[in-house]
Image (tube, rainbow, N blue to C red; front, side, top):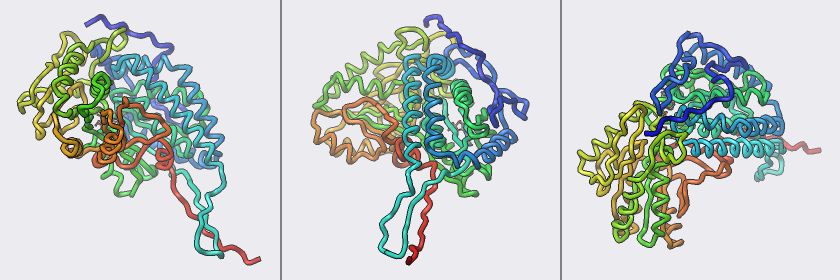
Length: 491
Ligand code: NAD
């Protein structure tokens, strides 16, 4: 393992809570260590917020909401664009912070920064459309007039995970602000540093105090207090399916709105007519980007039998040659896993795959030295009932099975409790469309890498999601719909 080339940061790291426009300490007087997954050293400690901090933040947001909801969409767009420009201006700092805190290669963090900028710019455009007059609805009554108006839902809690810290935050924060909601954000306890820096950018954009608040801390303290708070109108959550279920339960007594972006176990279906080079690239990207810590990882490869041997040989070579190392070293293709729990979980899955009789083609070992590094692993002939085939691993483990017919491929692809994304690789355009239509997934890529544009949609079927993010769907998830029906006066 090469010696880590640690980045320098432009300014002291932010470690405090951001509540009502002030950087403040927690009422718990507790702090949480933030660990560099490449070295296992503590980078810094941040505030470990608690229920009293959550209450202060929600009260501040609730107070600010009164005036914020009356701003025009055009005014809010100005703030969103100022945030986008701030992220651009501090892009290198944000990317370095994220790679240091999350462990992903710096090139991947730069892609995330670009995504954040594009998301804020896109929702600025959508915010401007909100100043149009109420939408008139044709009704079968000459004596009445009906219009639809969209209003912000109120104070929203945004709870995000550690795998794409800035991106998952931007996908919620930009539409929430565009809609006119006031926000309390809870970053992951593992990766709060990028979001705290983002908060400083939002602060510099001059948002009215209280409109945006950040409370760092654990899920059981801060997350649970947010989901139960009576003044929170909606919780937008991204994380594991197990915690998503808890969030839904906690929101039930106050009938809060809930949007959930949860786990996945997504398929990539490769037909025998596929361009082999393309198929190899798409499988590698779908399984190993961000060390496989992707909700959208297409880690279940289904390959049509005549192509199986060639695809396995090519993949095995690429997987074995993957350069795992320091996120800041040039040439690194995969960094460490983001935290110790994930590092241990992935190794348990690899052991279970072997025990369940999956054929190990590339053994993912653990390199010597500090850091949560795991070499990528590849299994073939994976039993369909095994945990490595059915459960979300969230790490660099590729599993492959062969199929004989299109119908078999579709049945195997859909044989999962998840339904986030899927990829189809074929030269037959009609088949690509047909299979995409039959797959139970919220996003299907045909012969394309996992590109996600903010103008489109994000979210899945079954246990992967409740609701959709991005595009107009993301904005709508932070809006109430009000119908106003008036009698038309006779004169
Ligand atoms: P997690 O569910 O453990 O934590 C997510 C967030 O919820 C964290 O901020 C955590 O502190 C908080 N939390 C924990 N317990 C809570 C509780 N009781 N109440 C409220 N909040 C609580 O998930 P993770 O390990 O951080 O992230 C990995 C998971 O996220 C994977 O399952 C992955 O598939 C999923 N994910 C989904 C998407 C998507 O778009 N569908 C995107 C990224 C990640």
